[in-house]
Image (tube, rainbow, N blue to C red; front, side, top):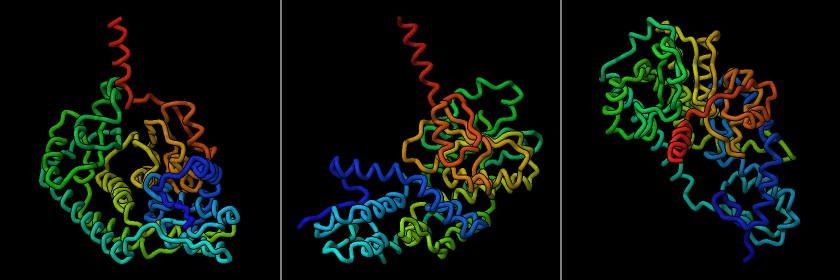
Amino acid sequence: MKSLNLSYNKIKDKKLDKALNDVFFKYQKKFVMLVSKAIQQETKNICLWLSSPVSRITMESKLYYNYCIAIFLKKKIKSYSFLDEIIVDTPELIKILNIFFKKEKTTIVLNNNESIVLKKIKNKLIFFKSFLKKIYQLFICKITKKNINEILKKKIILIDTFALPGYYSKDRYFNGLLRNLNENDKKNLYFSPTIAYTSYKDYYKVYSELKNSKSQFILKEDLLKFSDVIYAFFNCYKLKLFNFKSLIQENIDFSSLFNSDLKNADNDEMIIEGILNYKFVQRLKEKKVDIKLVIDWWENQPMDKGLSKGIQTFYPRTKLVGYLGYCPRQLELQLSPIKIESDFKYVPNTIAVIGKKIRKKIIKFNSKQKVITAPAFRYSYLWNIKKKNIIKK
């Protein structure tokens, strides 16, 4: 049997790899145009802005891959019509390809043998488990000592970052930042971390460590309400009922691929964090916290979009800078914001990058996006290595 496996994780031969890569690089602009068309169907839905299809995170979603496979095979029907079968990842892609291969002997088959019903049940269990974990996280934070009253008396600088094992109170993302600030700015600077890769049993220890740290933290969970968590999960669940319509390009209707990706549970936690970031900013405003500047560790993920929308909604006069502190990969499509994201305030007005060449990547789909250069804080350890080598010589 002559077969071609085009599933996402299958290793392809060099010739096929090169042909696919040509499509992956050539069709980026057309794909983001389709994404823009998709989000215009419901611009008021914050969850939709944070969803997997609109987020375009190729490391997390197979949408762009499957979009390119559909285009590739449509153009190469004659080259592959001799095959007995072509293996792909989703039932939706099979339906699209069957239209073009209906006159051929080739059968399009599904790579994944997992039951669709079982997958839906599994996704719902994951979703419910995530809800319980978030409620528990809020509870643990609130029974530890609060430290939010002092921020009400200051005009603060807020830095959005991450706290993870080994780096809860020790900064991993903005190393050396404090050395470049004056004493007044140091006093007014607060980190606001998203706690990641942490199990239930460690939450109490983590929150105690953060609240007793010499560094200054504003913990989102101190300000968020349980109703905010319920709101985030309810709206994320409700998102599954939405359906994109008529997303036609290259004479292919991609709406089924977009809808399949929309209902994928893999992105749910990021959507929820994005909504909670938005609600966190709302709670800061209600507390009348004065914010001079916000610096977001920015990767244009749902968490970043929620924060950006929150700051530009509740603090329209506050300067917001998205800081991209690493060198982007070629196919990280989300790192090239599209105009409609900026128009609707889901992207910071200013994005800081660690090298002039990276600017090209950021403005790829929106030439009006403001981009500046900034120090590579995450790689500041390299200076220490250089100094040690100089001393040795």
